[in-house]
Length: 170
Image (cartoon, rainbow, N blue to C red; front, side, top):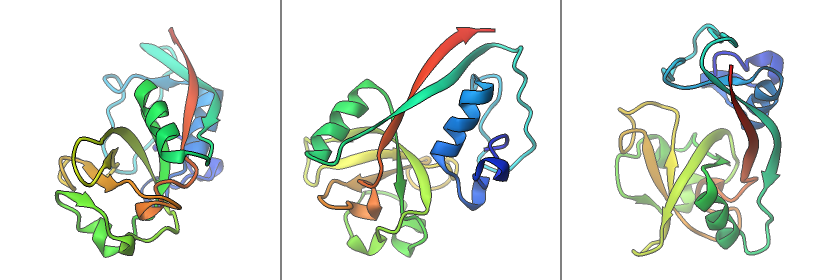
């Protein structure tokens, strides 16, 4: 968020873009969060390539639209997945607990988040999503978004992807 800035078509708290972040990461790599903690706010880039374990993006896998929910579940079983959602509606902005199932959330995506898991043992089935607004928002920084067809709740089915990464110690 601090380093992949407007030069990479990413605007931090004013609109992140995971593809832009991955492009930055492909060029420069990434420090571990323990060495470069996420603060949930725009800051000055403090990246130091020579410190700690570093990873870089080497490509991306896009989940195919056919059988989307099952393909997204398969992808999330391997590692977290980036998705775009619409986050400017009141139903999302005021979320505090439960599962968002309302289509009032919209589907015109404007915010990048990370799907970290899912629950299919309850009704409704839902995605477990990590947001970037800090632990004081939602359920300690997470939101549960109901599974649905088409664009999905909050547009979550739009453009799901995972980066291919390579990790090494600097």
